[in-house]
Length: 463
Image 1: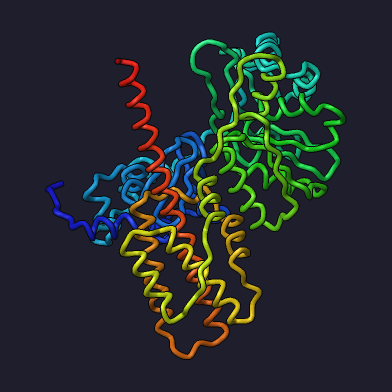
Image 2: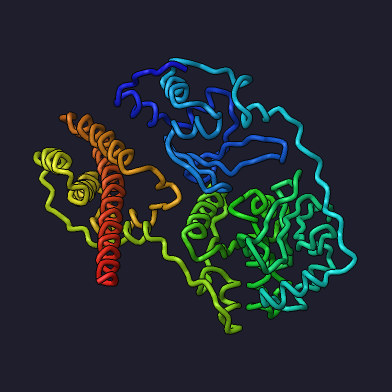
């Protein structure tokens, strides 16, 4: 394609397109997932729902990659940069039938599911799970006798099986038992993600894990009467199996999320909680492993090297900034000009403080119980790290867009009670957007400081 001199404004506009709306108009299938949308598509390996999107940002949880709208077009449709920008600007429409592999494969017939051939014994799986993972032998035996855990003949992998309501295998996940080299994990082709490795008891509790070994580790650590409860492994961050389990077992009413104590696990827990709430499941709690996951807890108990928990730096920074915000006395006739001055001066945290102070003021004017502290608590409660994937420039543009909404709102003269509530909502949204920008700036400063300290340490070592 010949060189096309797009302006910076055109690039920004293209990269800010709402992906869910854009893809829906082009015939792609989307499903609501908490505060995001999932893109549903199929290829030769089966049905996929690992790509989520919110506004102009997206993330592929399976391949751990994401970005803005332009990068999505390049990633999913294999478009070059000019074609992607033209598509997003509406200057060019490529029919989906001509789109590259991932879209075309929507029409391919999924492969039939077939379990790997079982080995004549489970010696390697038992040895791996007991000696390397410290899983209790009786727990391994329980699942082996139920034919949901076995050893495959070809590569001696551990195979974790998910069965349907009739006990028929519908899904399988392979995990290598080798202690050398990079570990191998793979979902068997043709697997139905509505099912996964699980145990269902008679109590109302369902414990949800990221992976089968996490689940077996938790059972080893909490073995007393474990069979009366229900447990399921998502094999990543997929919620389909959890929702299917809840709908298929009417006794289940309490969900305990047991994902990893790291960034991915915390994001997965928040996302799953939002999806469960959206599906009218409200009795939800969270159990954190002491270390990165429950198997690392087992390793620590057995005196071997283990991985510690990994804090969610972005969420922690967001909460820290909110906790340290200062309340200002709101003067409605001056509030907008003060916010605009702070915006011009790049004072994101100050914008957030002014906006929340103003939001509380307008809620009180509308005779609602609005307080600065209450709104700060609401910000912390509603913030989700899994939706905060945009880059700093995109967040700054979003903050500017919301500020323009606030400006339009402030042009009202006679303000009703409902309009005061709407003003409070706009200011609340502006505060959230400003804090997200402030978090990015804070993290960038921290990284710069750490890099500088590292450079000084290297220089001292050389001396």
